[in-house]
Amino acid sequence: MVRIVSGPKGSGKTKRMIDYANDSNISHEGEIVFINDREKYRVKLDNQIRYVNVEDFFITNKDVFFGFLNGLIAENYDITTVYIDNVLRITGLESINDLEELFSELRKLEDKYNLEFVLSVCAEDSEIPAFMKPAVC
Image 1 (cartoon, rainbow, N blue to C red):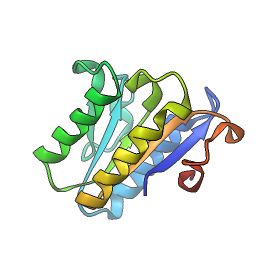
Image 2 (cartoon, one colour):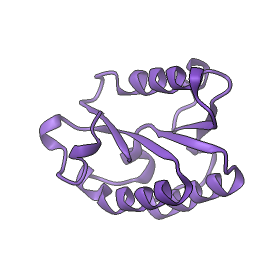
Image 3 (cartoon, helix red, strand yellow):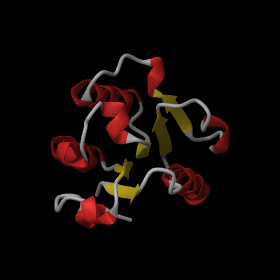
Image 4 (cartoon, rainbow, N blue to C red):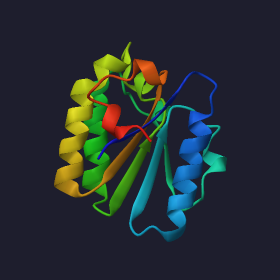
């Protein structure tokens, strides 16, 4: 299941995501990927976690980003968890409601390749749309 880490700007979503990734890496089998659009968080992650700064690539919208994710998975079938921090900013989407199609596509990847996505979104609990409510952690 796609999981969501939500909260207002400055509430510590990135820190929670990094903590989740580092904690899960201790007893985790398989590869973990952490995707962000800032370089500064690389040093906070365990060095066994693959850090991807999407600013190094030409990601302009959600469709390009989804293709990028497919390429990551095709390159390494041992990936079991993908953390995506600031998914709205990375995909260029304006609103959390605009994530419904991407959310559905990520679920298909999860089912097909037996992996998990954890996304952070800048939103209050009251702003979380119905399609995301079961995924909030």
